[in-house]
Length: 296
Image 1: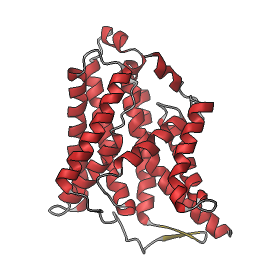
Image 2: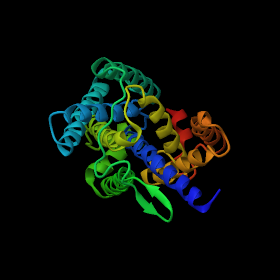
Image 3: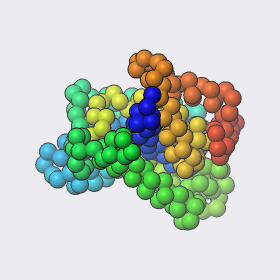
Image 4: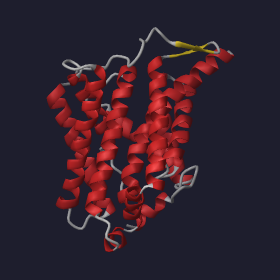
């Protein structure tokens, strides 16, 4: 393998890994507030992309993306508000099962509204053929958009959770919902806000990756699995570590095709997930012990 080929594999892996990282960030937002894992996160990605594709038929691309993010965020907020009111005695396990059911319902709704056809947004800038040279390798302009969105999202959320009163209140809800409520924090409102933010970021990710991967109604579940793998690999609740873990997983998948057939590429993430859960459940960066979920 030449140096140019190796670099091309790395760039492809970084692009894919950034997609996984953005999905994992959505997992972390809700985990940081509720302590649960939202397996409907992949469906937010699909819903945002499909909505933007539909809106783009009547509005310019920037307005279509902004509208899709707003609509998906509103849907996420409604789901979060519904969870806090509909689920009595909301244990972590019960809420996780509910999110799995929500993912199935959302997937069916997307299929009903948009059918099974593959769709895609146009490139934000340039085209697929107008790639940028990088030491003998090539990278598309849309891949740069994905990397930029990932970087801005992580920076913004880090500042939000560490340096704002609302962000700290959301983290307090995850640490101890009862104590947070006794301190005057509106727990239900924080849960709704976490689902709203998570859905908005998922929608933005869906719009960014649609020109690269294209969009179909059933792509949410595989994305959720990859995002969950990255969140676990980096350490649940740590968005900065999720980026590093996402890039690592993306590069591993990219280079795996040199050894295994392309059909086995998705098995790499499953193998990584199982290995981490068995040997280091706190993740590579050990931000939080995922095994603590068993105590709830």
